[in-house]
Length: 201
Image 1 (cartoon, one colour):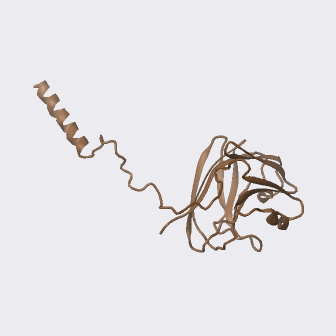
Image 2 (image 1 turned 30 degrees about the vertical axis):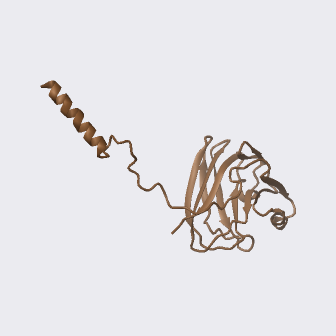
Image 3 (image 1 turned 135 degrees about the horizontal axis):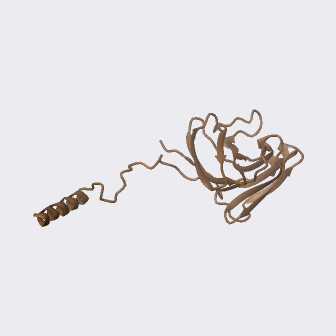
């Protein structure tokens, strides 16, 4: 009798597996996220030489002129001071003086065209020397410096984390720029794997 019950139990397990039950090993997740378009960020994995350092001691206008189309630039504006370095696919900023506002040390890519009302998916990895927050935006250059993405805040720890954010552009132009705002705190920050993709309708 025991042998008969064992055989029946085995047959039930096999039937469950063949029907795609909990023993099938197949994911029950049908949708892992939004459907995305083409990558908008160039060198988001930070190859060697992908970031140009620029000390902005003559005002923001000179910083904008120094930007290389489609390249990363690192801006330093007094009273903040710091250095940016790329190594092994990671951009790291060391903060010598935190300054008095978060925009005085910026990692920037320009242009990152935005369309009003369009949805985008933003993703990156980051960590810091000490727990701290950073702000990130995609926005207008000059004027009211409108953040088309909204001002996005991310809380970093000393361990790598992957951050994602969906946003709907509240404005747009062909010459918007992505800005990681890294000053206002003495802790250094490391960033890798930056991506922005449009969300397909």
